Length: 473
Image 1 (spheres, helix red, strand yellow):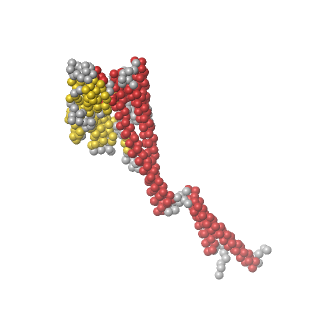
Image 2 (spheres, one colour):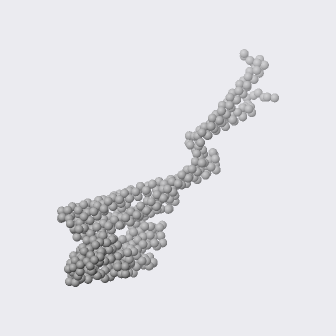
Image 3 (cartoon, helix red, strand yellow):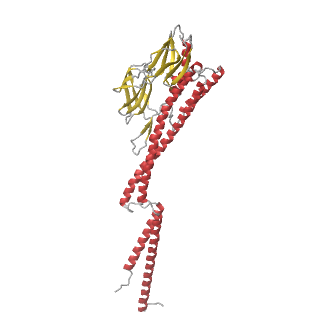
Protein backbone atom coordinates (compact mmCIF):
# COMPACT_ATOMS: atom_id res chain seq x y z
CA UNK A 1 0.00 0.00 0.00
CA UNK A 2 1.34 3.40 -0.98
CA UNK A 3 1.64 5.84 1.86
CA UNK A 4 0.92 9.49 1.25
CA UNK A 5 2.68 11.85 3.64
CA UNK A 6 5.22 14.68 4.05
CA UNK A 7 8.23 12.37 3.67
CA UNK A 8 10.36 12.05 0.48
CA UNK A 9 9.78 8.89 -1.47
CA UNK A 10 12.49 6.48 -2.57
CA UNK A 11 12.03 7.63 -6.15
CA UNK A 12 12.54 11.23 -5.17
CA UNK A 13 15.62 10.33 -3.14
CA UNK A 14 17.09 8.59 -6.17
CA UNK A 15 16.40 11.56 -8.42
CA UNK A 16 17.78 14.05 -5.88
CA UNK A 17 20.92 11.92 -5.50
CA UNK A 18 21.25 11.76 -9.28
CA UNK A 19 20.85 15.55 -9.51
CA UNK A 20 23.49 16.15 -6.81
CA UNK A 21 25.93 13.75 -8.48
CA UNK A 22 25.41 15.36 -11.89
CA UNK A 23 25.87 18.86 -10.49
CA UNK A 24 29.01 17.72 -8.64
CA UNK A 25 30.48 16.31 -11.87
CA UNK A 26 29.62 19.53 -13.68
CA UNK A 27 31.33 21.57 -10.94
CA UNK A 28 34.45 19.38 -10.98
CA UNK A 29 34.74 19.40 -14.78
CA UNK A 30 34.26 23.17 -14.85
CA UNK A 31 36.97 23.56 -12.19
CA UNK A 32 39.35 21.35 -14.18
CA UNK A 33 38.77 23.43 -17.31
CA UNK A 34 39.27 26.67 -15.38
CA UNK A 35 42.50 25.49 -13.69
CA UNK A 36 43.80 23.46 -16.61
CA UNK A 37 44.50 20.62 -14.17
CA UNK A 38 42.92 17.26 -13.53
CA UNK A 39 44.02 17.11 -9.92
CA UNK A 40 43.23 20.19 -7.85
CA UNK A 41 43.22 18.54 -4.41
CA UNK A 42 44.35 15.27 -2.81
CA UNK A 43 40.74 14.05 -2.82
CA UNK A 44 40.68 14.00 -6.63
CA UNK A 45 43.24 11.15 -6.77
CA UNK A 46 45.44 10.63 -3.67
CA UNK A 47 48.07 8.43 -5.36
CA UNK A 48 48.31 10.64 -8.44
CA UNK A 49 48.43 13.74 -6.23
CA UNK A 50 51.51 12.40 -4.41
CA UNK A 51 53.29 11.52 -7.67
CA UNK A 52 52.34 14.88 -9.15
CA UNK A 53 53.74 16.69 -6.10
CA UNK A 54 57.01 14.81 -6.44
CA UNK A 55 57.34 15.64 -10.12
CA UNK A 56 56.43 19.30 -9.60
CA UNK A 57 58.98 19.63 -6.81
CA UNK A 58 61.67 18.12 -9.03
CA UNK A 59 60.66 20.41 -11.88
CA UNK A 60 60.91 23.43 -9.55
CA UNK A 61 64.51 22.48 -8.74
CA UNK A 62 65.33 22.03 -12.43
CA UNK A 63 63.76 25.38 -13.35
CA UNK A 64 65.68 27.08 -10.54
CA UNK A 65 68.92 25.61 -11.86
CA UNK A 66 67.93 26.69 -15.38
CA UNK A 67 67.53 30.25 -14.16
CA UNK A 68 70.99 30.06 -12.59
CA UNK A 69 72.41 28.77 -15.87
CA UNK A 70 70.83 31.68 -17.75
CA UNK A 71 72.29 34.17 -15.26
CA UNK A 72 75.73 32.58 -15.54
CA UNK A 73 75.48 32.59 -19.32
CA UNK A 74 74.73 36.32 -19.34
CA UNK A 75 77.67 37.12 -17.07
CA UNK A 76 80.15 34.95 -18.94
CA UNK A 77 78.95 36.27 -22.30
CA UNK A 78 79.71 39.80 -21.15
CA UNK A 79 83.17 38.67 -20.07
CA UNK A 80 83.70 37.13 -23.52
CA UNK A 81 82.69 40.39 -25.17
CA UNK A 82 85.14 42.34 -23.00
CA UNK A 83 87.94 39.89 -23.89
CA UNK A 84 87.17 40.44 -27.57
CA UNK A 85 87.43 44.19 -27.00
CA UNK A 86 90.85 43.76 -25.35
CA UNK A 87 92.00 41.63 -28.28
CA UNK A 88 90.96 44.43 -30.65
CA UNK A 89 93.11 46.91 -28.72
CA UNK A 90 96.09 44.53 -28.64
CA UNK A 91 95.85 44.03 -32.38
CA UNK A 92 95.88 47.82 -32.78
CA UNK A 93 99.01 48.13 -30.61
CA UNK A 94 100.74 45.41 -32.56
CA UNK A 95 99.93 47.15 -35.83
CA UNK A 96 101.51 50.38 -34.53
CA UNK A 97 104.66 48.56 -33.37
CA UNK A 98 105.10 46.48 -36.53
CA UNK A 99 105.05 49.66 -38.59
CA UNK A 100 108.39 50.69 -37.03
CA UNK A 101 110.20 47.33 -36.96
CA UNK A 102 112.35 48.52 -39.85
CA UNK A 103 112.81 51.85 -38.00
CA UNK A 104 111.71 53.79 -41.08
CA UNK A 105 109.22 56.10 -39.33
CA UNK A 106 110.00 59.78 -38.94
CA UNK A 107 110.06 61.21 -35.39
CA UNK A 108 106.62 62.74 -35.94
CA UNK A 109 105.21 59.49 -37.28
CA UNK A 110 106.75 57.57 -34.39
CA UNK A 111 105.18 59.99 -31.92
CA UNK A 112 101.79 59.51 -33.56
CA UNK A 113 102.14 55.73 -33.34
CA UNK A 114 103.16 56.00 -29.70
CA UNK A 115 100.08 58.14 -29.01
CA UNK A 116 97.90 55.46 -30.61
CA UNK A 117 99.56 52.83 -28.40
CA UNK A 118 98.90 54.96 -25.32
CA UNK A 119 95.25 55.31 -26.31
CA UNK A 120 94.84 51.56 -26.78
CA UNK A 121 96.49 50.78 -23.43
CA UNK A 122 94.19 53.29 -21.77
CA UNK A 123 91.21 51.61 -23.41
CA UNK A 124 92.31 48.23 -22.03
CA UNK A 125 92.55 49.74 -18.55
CA UNK A 126 88.99 51.01 -18.89
CA UNK A 127 87.71 47.66 -20.16
CA UNK A 128 89.18 45.64 -17.29
CA UNK A 129 87.89 48.24 -14.82
CA UNK A 130 84.28 47.83 -15.91
CA UNK A 131 81.83 46.27 -13.45
CA UNK A 132 79.93 43.28 -14.76
CA UNK A 133 77.11 42.37 -12.41
CA UNK A 134 78.90 44.21 -9.62
CA UNK A 135 82.32 42.62 -10.15
CA UNK A 136 85.38 43.54 -12.17
CA UNK A 137 85.45 40.20 -13.95
CA UNK A 138 88.60 41.00 -15.94
CA UNK A 139 90.24 43.10 -13.25
CA UNK A 140 90.90 40.29 -10.77
CA UNK A 141 87.44 40.34 -9.20
CA UNK A 142 86.70 36.89 -10.62
CA UNK A 143 89.95 35.26 -9.53
CA UNK A 144 91.04 33.45 -6.38
CA UNK A 145 93.02 35.26 -3.69
CA UNK A 146 96.74 34.43 -3.48
CA UNK A 147 98.50 35.15 -0.19
CA UNK A 148 102.25 34.88 0.38
CA UNK A 149 103.42 35.23 -3.23
CA UNK A 150 107.02 36.50 -3.42
CA UNK A 151 107.41 38.15 -6.88
CA UNK A 152 111.15 37.44 -6.78
CA UNK A 153 110.31 33.75 -6.69
CA UNK A 154 106.96 33.39 -8.47
CA UNK A 155 106.14 35.57 -11.47
CA UNK A 156 102.76 34.03 -12.28
CA UNK A 157 100.26 31.83 -10.48
CA UNK A 158 96.78 30.75 -11.47
CA UNK A 159 94.41 28.38 -9.70
CA UNK A 160 91.59 26.71 -11.59
CA UNK A 161 89.85 24.79 -8.83
CA UNK A 162 90.15 24.29 -5.07
CA UNK A 163 87.69 21.39 -5.02
CA UNK A 164 85.40 21.69 -2.04
CA UNK A 165 88.11 23.18 0.17
CA UNK A 166 87.91 26.75 1.46
CA UNK A 167 91.65 27.15 0.89
CA UNK A 168 94.59 25.27 -0.60
CA UNK A 169 98.33 25.81 -0.29
CA UNK A 170 101.39 25.39 -2.51
CA UNK A 171 104.75 24.72 -0.90
CA UNK A 172 108.12 23.29 -1.90
CA UNK A 173 111.23 24.31 -3.76
CA UNK A 174 112.88 24.55 -7.17
CA UNK A 175 115.59 21.93 -7.54
CA UNK A 176 116.94 23.21 -10.85
CA UNK A 177 115.86 26.20 -12.90
CA UNK A 178 115.03 26.14 -16.59
CA UNK A 179 117.49 27.42 -19.15
CA UNK A 180 117.22 29.07 -22.53
CA UNK A 181 118.57 27.62 -25.76
CA UNK A 182 121.97 29.16 -26.60
CA UNK A 183 124.51 29.16 -29.43
CA UNK A 184 127.41 31.43 -30.39
CA UNK A 185 129.50 32.74 -33.27
CA UNK A 186 133.09 33.94 -32.89
CA UNK A 187 134.34 36.83 -35.01
CA UNK A 188 137.66 38.60 -34.95
CA UNK A 189 138.32 42.09 -33.81
CA UNK A 190 134.63 42.65 -33.18
CA UNK A 191 133.62 41.97 -36.80
CA UNK A 192 132.39 39.09 -38.96
CA UNK A 193 135.12 37.16 -40.71
CA UNK A 194 133.18 36.16 -43.86
CA UNK A 195 130.21 37.04 -45.99
CA UNK A 196 127.18 34.81 -45.60
CA UNK A 197 123.42 34.60 -45.65
CA UNK A 198 122.07 32.98 -42.50
CA UNK A 199 118.68 31.83 -41.31
CA UNK A 200 117.97 32.32 -37.63
CA UNK A 201 115.12 30.19 -36.27
CA UNK A 202 113.44 29.88 -32.92
CA UNK A 203 110.14 28.76 -31.44
CA UNK A 204 108.33 31.66 -33.17
CA UNK A 205 109.66 31.11 -36.68
CA UNK A 206 112.62 32.14 -38.78
CA UNK A 207 114.23 35.15 -40.46
CA UNK A 208 116.95 35.62 -43.05
CA UNK A 209 119.93 37.81 -42.12
CA UNK A 210 122.68 39.03 -44.45
CA UNK A 211 126.24 39.04 -43.07
CA UNK A 212 129.05 40.99 -44.72
CA UNK A 213 132.73 40.40 -44.13
CA UNK A 214 133.99 43.10 -41.80
CA UNK A 215 130.47 43.89 -40.51
CA UNK A 216 130.57 44.78 -36.84
CA UNK A 217 129.11 42.19 -34.51
CA UNK A 218 127.03 44.91 -32.84
CA UNK A 219 125.46 45.75 -36.21
CA UNK A 220 124.74 42.07 -36.77
CA UNK A 221 123.31 41.83 -33.26
CA UNK A 222 120.92 44.69 -33.98
CA UNK A 223 119.81 43.09 -37.24
CA UNK A 224 119.06 39.84 -35.41
CA UNK A 225 117.22 41.61 -32.60
CA UNK A 226 115.10 43.56 -35.10
CA UNK A 227 113.70 40.18 -36.18
CA UNK A 228 113.30 38.77 -32.67
CA UNK A 229 109.50 39.13 -32.83
CA UNK A 230 109.54 36.74 -35.79
CA UNK A 231 112.06 34.25 -34.43
CA UNK A 232 111.93 34.31 -30.65
CA UNK A 233 115.73 34.66 -30.63
CA UNK A 234 117.79 37.62 -29.35
CA UNK A 235 121.49 38.30 -29.71
CA UNK A 236 124.16 39.95 -27.57
CA UNK A 237 127.86 40.78 -28.06
CA UNK A 238 130.74 40.35 -25.66
CA UNK A 239 134.13 40.99 -27.25
CA UNK A 240 134.46 38.77 -30.30
CA UNK A 241 131.51 36.55 -29.36
CA UNK A 242 128.03 36.97 -30.81
CA UNK A 243 125.62 34.99 -28.64
CA UNK A 244 122.22 33.73 -29.72
CA UNK A 245 119.65 33.05 -27.01
CA UNK A 246 116.02 32.01 -27.06
CA UNK A 247 113.58 34.27 -25.27
CA UNK A 248 111.66 31.24 -24.02
CA UNK A 249 112.89 28.75 -21.44
CA UNK A 250 112.77 24.98 -21.43
CA UNK A 251 112.97 22.04 -23.79
CA UNK A 252 110.56 23.65 -26.25
CA UNK A 253 112.82 26.68 -26.63
CA UNK A 254 115.15 26.42 -29.62
CA UNK A 255 117.88 28.35 -31.44
CA UNK A 256 118.92 27.42 -34.93
CA UNK A 257 121.48 29.26 -37.07
CA UNK A 258 122.24 27.94 -40.54
CA UNK A 259 124.26 29.46 -43.39
CA UNK A 260 122.34 29.24 -46.65
CA UNK A 261 125.39 30.66 -48.44
CA UNK A 262 128.91 31.55 -47.42
CA UNK A 263 130.50 30.55 -44.13
CA UNK A 264 129.09 31.23 -40.66
CA UNK A 265 130.32 28.74 -38.06
CA UNK A 266 128.15 28.48 -34.95
CA UNK A 267 128.88 26.41 -31.85
CA UNK A 268 126.39 24.97 -29.38
CA UNK A 269 124.06 23.32 -31.90
CA UNK A 270 122.98 19.71 -31.53
CA UNK A 271 122.63 16.92 -34.05
CA UNK A 272 119.39 18.46 -35.28
CA UNK A 273 121.26 21.74 -36.01
CA UNK A 274 119.52 23.46 -33.12
CA UNK A 275 120.21 24.29 -29.51
CA UNK A 276 117.57 23.47 -26.90
CA UNK A 277 116.77 24.75 -23.45
CA UNK A 278 116.22 22.63 -20.36
CA UNK A 279 113.05 22.40 -18.24
CA UNK A 280 113.05 23.21 -14.54
CA UNK A 281 112.60 20.54 -11.85
CA UNK A 282 110.82 21.25 -8.58
CA UNK A 283 109.25 19.64 -5.55
CA UNK A 284 105.70 20.93 -5.12
CA UNK A 285 103.42 19.72 -2.36
CA UNK A 286 105.62 16.69 -1.86
CA UNK A 287 105.83 15.65 -5.51
CA UNK A 288 108.87 15.94 -7.77
CA UNK A 289 107.69 17.41 -11.07
CA UNK A 290 109.26 18.55 -14.33
CA UNK A 291 108.06 21.86 -15.68
CA UNK A 292 107.41 23.33 -19.08
CA UNK A 293 110.27 25.78 -18.88
CA UNK A 294 109.77 27.37 -15.45
CA UNK A 295 106.01 26.76 -15.45
CA UNK A 296 104.47 23.86 -13.56
CA UNK A 297 100.97 22.43 -13.73
CA UNK A 298 99.79 21.26 -10.32
CA UNK A 299 97.23 18.51 -9.83
CA UNK A 300 97.39 17.72 -6.14
CA UNK A 301 94.29 16.24 -4.57
CA UNK A 302 91.48 18.67 -5.34
CA UNK A 303 93.84 21.53 -6.22
CA UNK A 304 94.29 22.43 -9.88
CA UNK A 305 96.70 25.29 -10.57
CA UNK A 306 99.77 26.44 -12.47
CA UNK A 307 102.76 28.37 -11.20
CA UNK A 308 105.70 29.95 -13.04
CA UNK A 309 108.94 30.64 -11.22
CA UNK A 310 111.29 33.50 -11.92
CA UNK A 311 114.16 32.73 -14.28
CA UNK A 312 117.22 31.57 -12.36
CA UNK A 313 115.41 31.00 -9.07
CA UNK A 314 116.25 27.86 -7.11
CA UNK A 315 115.68 26.84 -3.52
CA UNK A 316 112.64 26.77 -1.25
CA UNK A 317 109.90 29.21 -2.14
CA UNK A 318 107.51 30.96 0.23
CA UNK A 319 104.35 28.98 0.80
CA UNK A 320 101.31 30.35 -1.05
CA UNK A 321 97.75 30.06 0.25
CA UNK A 322 94.93 30.15 -2.27
CA UNK A 323 91.42 30.99 -1.14
CA UNK A 324 88.20 32.66 -2.23
CA UNK A 325 85.41 31.57 -4.56
CA UNK A 326 86.40 33.13 -7.92
CA UNK A 327 83.20 32.97 -10.01
CA UNK A 328 81.04 30.32 -8.41
CA UNK A 329 77.76 29.23 -10.00
CA UNK A 330 75.15 26.78 -8.83
CA UNK A 331 74.43 24.99 -12.09
CA UNK A 332 72.96 21.90 -10.47
CA UNK A 333 69.80 20.88 -8.62
CA UNK A 334 72.05 20.28 -5.61
CA UNK A 335 72.77 23.47 -3.67
CA UNK A 336 76.21 22.20 -2.62
CA UNK A 337 77.35 21.42 -6.17
CA UNK A 338 78.97 24.52 -7.67
CA UNK A 339 80.88 25.20 -10.89
CA UNK A 340 83.90 27.51 -10.61
CA UNK A 341 85.51 29.80 -13.17
CA UNK A 342 88.64 31.75 -12.23
CA UNK A 343 89.59 34.65 -14.52
CA UNK A 344 92.96 36.29 -13.84
CA UNK A 345 93.29 40.05 -13.99
CA UNK A 346 94.04 41.40 -17.46
CA UNK A 347 95.40 44.82 -16.51
CA UNK A 348 98.17 46.11 -18.81
CA UNK A 349 100.77 45.41 -16.12
CA UNK A 350 99.71 41.75 -16.14
CA UNK A 351 99.51 41.33 -19.90
CA UNK A 352 102.79 40.22 -21.40
CA UNK A 353 105.48 37.68 -20.69
CA UNK A 354 109.22 37.20 -20.68
CA UNK A 355 109.78 40.21 -22.95
CA UNK A 356 107.94 42.62 -20.66
CA UNK A 357 104.41 43.80 -20.00
CA UNK A 358 102.00 46.06 -21.82
CA UNK A 359 102.20 48.94 -19.35
CA UNK A 360 105.91 49.28 -20.17
CA UNK A 361 104.97 50.23 -23.74
CA UNK A 362 103.05 53.31 -22.60
CA UNK A 363 104.75 56.70 -22.73
CA UNK A 364 107.20 56.88 -19.83
CA UNK A 365 107.48 53.09 -19.68
CA UNK A 366 110.76 51.23 -19.87
CA UNK A 367 110.02 49.88 -23.36
CA UNK A 368 108.16 52.85 -24.89
CA UNK A 369 109.18 54.83 -27.95
CA UNK A 370 109.36 52.17 -30.69
CA UNK A 371 112.43 52.70 -32.94
CA UNK A 372 115.04 50.15 -31.93
CA UNK A 373 112.57 48.73 -29.40
CA UNK A 374 109.81 48.10 -31.94
CA UNK A 375 110.58 44.40 -32.32
CA UNK A 376 110.58 43.96 -28.54
CA UNK A 377 107.25 45.81 -28.44
CA UNK A 378 105.81 43.35 -30.94
CA UNK A 379 107.07 40.47 -28.78
CA UNK A 380 105.39 41.95 -25.72
CA UNK A 381 102.10 42.28 -27.57
CA UNK A 382 102.38 38.73 -28.89
CA UNK A 383 102.99 37.45 -25.37
CA UNK A 384 100.03 39.51 -24.16
CA UNK A 385 97.90 37.99 -26.92
CA UNK A 386 99.12 34.56 -25.86
CA UNK A 387 97.99 35.14 -22.29
CA UNK A 388 94.69 36.58 -23.48
CA UNK A 389 94.15 33.51 -25.64
CA UNK A 390 94.72 31.24 -22.63
CA UNK A 391 92.22 33.21 -20.57
CA UNK A 392 89.79 33.24 -23.49
CA UNK A 393 90.13 29.48 -23.68
CA UNK A 394 89.20 29.18 -20.00
CA UNK A 395 86.15 31.39 -20.40
CA UNK A 396 85.01 29.88 -23.70
CA UNK A 397 85.56 26.38 -22.38
CA UNK A 398 83.42 27.15 -19.34
CA UNK A 399 80.73 28.68 -21.53
CA UNK A 400 80.69 25.76 -23.98
CA UNK A 401 81.45 22.76 -21.80
CA UNK A 402 79.76 23.78 -18.55
CA UNK A 403 77.07 26.39 -19.16
CA UNK A 404 75.86 25.19 -22.56
CA UNK A 405 75.94 21.55 -21.46
CA UNK A 406 74.00 22.37 -18.28
CA UNK A 407 71.45 24.37 -20.24
CA UNK A 408 70.86 21.51 -22.68
CA UNK A 409 70.68 18.97 -19.85
CA UNK A 410 68.15 20.95 -17.83
CA UNK A 411 66.05 21.76 -20.89
CA UNK A 412 65.82 18.04 -21.53
CA UNK A 413 64.99 17.30 -17.89
CA UNK A 414 62.32 19.99 -17.82
CA UNK A 415 60.70 18.67 -21.00
CA UNK A 416 60.62 15.11 -19.67
CA UNK A 417 59.19 16.21 -16.33
CA UNK A 418 56.58 18.37 -18.03
CA UNK A 419 55.55 15.44 -20.22
CA UNK A 420 55.20 13.24 -17.13
CA UNK A 421 53.18 15.94 -15.35
CA UNK A 422 50.95 16.43 -18.38
CA UNK A 423 50.25 12.71 -18.58
CA UNK A 424 48.98 12.81 -15.01
CA UNK A 425 47.43 16.26 -14.81
CA UNK A 426 46.80 17.76 -18.26
CA UNK A 427 43.13 18.50 -18.93
CA UNK A 428 41.44 17.36 -22.13
CA UNK A 429 38.98 20.20 -22.60
CA UNK A 430 36.88 18.28 -25.12
CA UNK A 431 36.52 15.38 -22.70
CA UNK A 432 35.60 17.71 -19.83
CA UNK A 433 33.02 19.49 -21.97
CA UNK A 434 31.53 16.13 -22.88
CA UNK A 435 31.31 15.29 -19.15
CA UNK A 436 29.55 18.60 -18.50
CA UNK A 437 27.09 18.02 -21.35
CA UNK A 438 26.33 14.46 -20.26
CA UNK A 439 25.81 15.43 -16.63
CA UNK A 440 23.76 18.45 -17.59
CA UNK A 441 21.37 16.07 -19.38
CA UNK A 442 21.30 13.85 -16.29
CA UNK A 443 20.63 16.87 -14.09
CA UNK A 444 17.87 18.08 -16.39
CA UNK A 445 16.32 14.60 -16.37
CA UNK A 446 16.45 14.43 -12.58
CA UNK A 447 14.83 17.86 -12.25
CA UNK A 448 12.10 16.84 -14.69
CA UNK A 449 11.51 13.61 -12.79
CA UNK A 450 11.26 15.42 -9.48
CA UNK A 451 8.79 17.88 -11.07
CA UNK A 452 6.64 14.97 -12.33
CA UNK A 453 6.60 13.34 -8.89
CA UNK A 454 5.63 16.63 -7.30
CA UNK A 455 2.80 17.05 -9.82
CA UNK A 456 1.59 13.52 -9.09
CA UNK A 457 1.64 14.24 -5.37
CA UNK A 458 -0.42 17.38 -5.85
CA UNK A 459 -2.94 15.45 -7.99
CA UNK A 460 -3.37 12.71 -5.38
CA UNK A 461 -3.75 15.32 -2.65
CA UNK A 462 -6.52 17.02 -4.64
CA UNK A 463 -8.44 13.74 -5.04
CA UNK A 464 -8.23 13.04 -1.33
CA UNK A 465 -9.47 16.49 -0.54
CA UNK A 466 -12.43 16.01 -2.89
CA UNK A 467 -13.25 12.66 -1.39
CA UNK A 468 -13.22 14.14 2.05
CA UNK A 469 -15.41 17.05 0.99
CA UNK A 470 -12.60 19.46 1.59
CA UNK A 471 -12.22 20.58 -1.97
CA UNK A 472 -13.00 24.21 -2.66
CA UNK A 473 -13.51 23.65 -6.39
